[in-house]
Every structure is written in C-alpha cells, then in structure tokens.
Image 1 (cartoon, protein in one colour):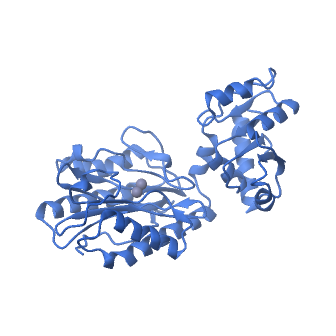
Image 2 (tube, protein in one colour):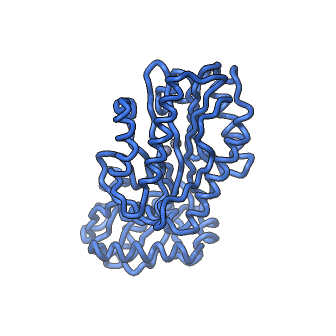
Image 3 (cartoon, protein in one colour):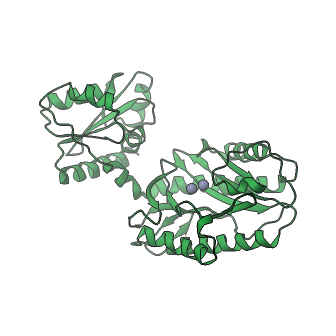
Length: 359
Ligand code: ZN
Ligand code: ZN
C-alpha cells in the first residue's frame, strides 16, 4: 500500500506545480487518508511539489501512522495544521496551498498569524480531483463493499412481511451487512414504505409494512473505507397498475443512465438520458434530484451527475445511477446501482436484479 500512497502524493505534487504552489497543507481527513492510508480524527499532511511529505498527528494515532505509512516523516503533535505551517515557513515555502473548503475562518486566521512571509492561497479541490479516478486497488474494495450489499439484500428479502416496521427492516439490513464482513454502514439506511416512499430521504420510522405498499430500501456496506450505495424498491403482497407503471418507468430510466455512463460522456447528458424519459412520461416534476454521484472514500463525491453540473466521465470513475419518481401522498420508486465507468463500457458493481419483486 505504501507505494500506492507515494504515487498519489507524487501525482498531487505534479498537479500543484502546474498551479504554482510550492507545497500543500492537506487538512481534510479523508484526503489525508487517501494520501497516506492513515484514518484518524486529527491529522494533517504537508506535501511538497516534489511529492515528499510530512505527516502530523497526535499521540492517539502515532503508532498506527508508523505502521501504515512508515515512508512518511511523522511529527507527533496535537495542533497539526499550525505545526506543519510553521514547518513550511521554516523551509522557505512562499505559496502554501490550503484546503479552503475545509479550513474554518478561525483556523485560517491562526495559520496566517504564524509567519508574514508565507502566502496561504486556496489549493482548490486538487485532491478530490485526483480521487475521482480510482486505481484497481480501490475498485476492488468498492466491488467487495457492493458484494456485501447485494448479499445482505438477498438474505433479508425473504424476511420482509407485513407488520415489520421500517426501522426493523433497516436494522435487518444493517445487521446482515456487518455480519457478512462490512466494517460498518456507508450511510444511514433508508427504508420508506407506502406513502413515505414519496420522500426521497425518509428516515425509517415506526410505520409497519402493509400489503399493497411499495417499499424503497437505500443502503450500502462500508468496506476498508469504501462506500457501496444501492437502492431497490419492492412491492408487498400485491401491486397496483400505477405502481407497476412508475416502477417500469424508473427501471428503464435507470438502465438508460447506466448505458449513458461512458468514458468521455458529459455528466449532464448522462443525467438527461434518464431524466428525459421520466419527463416524457409526464413525471418530470416527480424526480427532484440529480441522477447520481461519485462514490469512494466518501459516499457522495465528485463527479455529481445533475442537469446543471458540468463534468466529464472517465475510465475508472465509480458513480451511481439512481433516478426516482415520488408521488406525494401515494408512494415512490427509486432504483440505484453503483457502477464503474470503463473504457469499454460501464461495469455494474451492485448486481441485484431489478425486475419488480412482489414479496
Ligand atoms: Zn443510495
Ligand atoms: Zn446514492
């Protein structure tokens, strides 16, 4: 793993040099993890344009840091960003890029007070940009997270029955993912039954499943830091014509989104491939969110797939395709897969079938 992280730091150094930064102060913890392998609640990384780096973390994580990134110089210190900024100033750095989307106004004032000679321009989302295209190691971890998610669904499906509450269904999924080997949940599981299905991010509550409900379950396993994301909607007992109709519409739109997720595709066109189908069926207003998002060390990361967000898909970028139709007071359908864009076409990582199941 050490080699992979060094390669990432070298790539960051090359990107920085192109933007005329002498060094970068990485404070977003997920970015520190990406560049070193260290997962912690307090760390920062100083990366020079040649790719060399110094890590700062406090005593709680020092031992882990020595294990996971022995090739990086380590400073054990609680005030991680302050210490690394002082170090950069001592090293004669003139332009130290900071993660302005992470540093608070208060922290920034403290950092600028350290040394008058050092400029602290915003680094931008350079690390997030690097993180968008995954290496095969990362795709392997994501694939495993998705397998655990598929398996948990297959195991819980036969247990669904009227009378179970949304919360109980959520716990069955959560418990099963962890029993199968997940490190935890990728995010809080969503279970939305009957009329609650019209709320895209409904939190599971006390409502019991009833015959005639559509039930939407949106969940995923967390595995070695990587987040799976899958949604399936099933019918309980029976299915009405209007339910069948919106289900088939969402299923076709979801597939159109998957098919459009090609190397080089404009993200707005991928969104449109699914959205236009839903609009044409008269449900455009009932699909109020973007088609999908990148997944990796975060559950929502670049690129975002929406009609108003420009971007381009590339080989080895994992994303979701997750259109929905939500009818207030009645119910809704969402279907979501995690997939990877590949040079020769999309590769599905979540593989659970998408025909309408009546359980
Ligand atoms: Zn989801
Ligand atoms: Zn999602």
